[in-house]
Length: 301
Image (cartoon, rainbow, N blue to C red; front, side):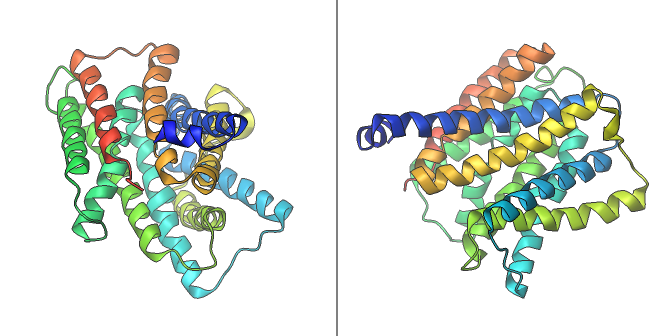
């Protein structure tokens, strides 16, 4: 697919698209690293999600104002924003700031790579997609990769960490549910950028009352390393989403699906390079199996 794609467009255009794919993947992979750094001093998860929601919503609001891009507010749009805001931001981000404190960044990155596999599985269960043997084989490889991380005692650095390793799978399942919901229920007249803006605002309205009711607060005006990491993670998250939206519009979902390789590999090697993480042989085997599984699971059209 990639070879055909690069042959049928101008070379300069190909470089732009591959560059955008690489940068977006690195941004997404970097969010795990910066999330890990932001919880280093014990900041409460909901307090971090609070600021991430505010930063993300502010960036989207600035974009809408600058571009003069109106946001539809009919009832069906509000329901769509609310569901996506919960499944795609408020719920998974709250969990991710909890488990990333206890897991290596590389392990979390491998487990989060199950999103497309869970999306495919849900599509099969809902009969929204036809069963394909090759893609089912990819599902099996991904499942084996997860088992190699969770089951052997030697795969994770500390005893009992397999319980924390279940939380990235919960996060991945939430993202998969969001993907299936968007594919089935995205209203007409609401493009991908509007959907991103709407879910960002919806997540903000969900997270702020929870954070205030719990009395959690993270003072980002201190601008220490942890606070800067939180800001970096929030900005990279929105940039990665923007890159994904732009790539799907410019190159299609098949080409864009390759971002999964970059996200997972960059997350693993960021942990190794910047945090000195090391892994048992079973984790490296799991990484290879996950990469192979992603190659089979990516959409056929």
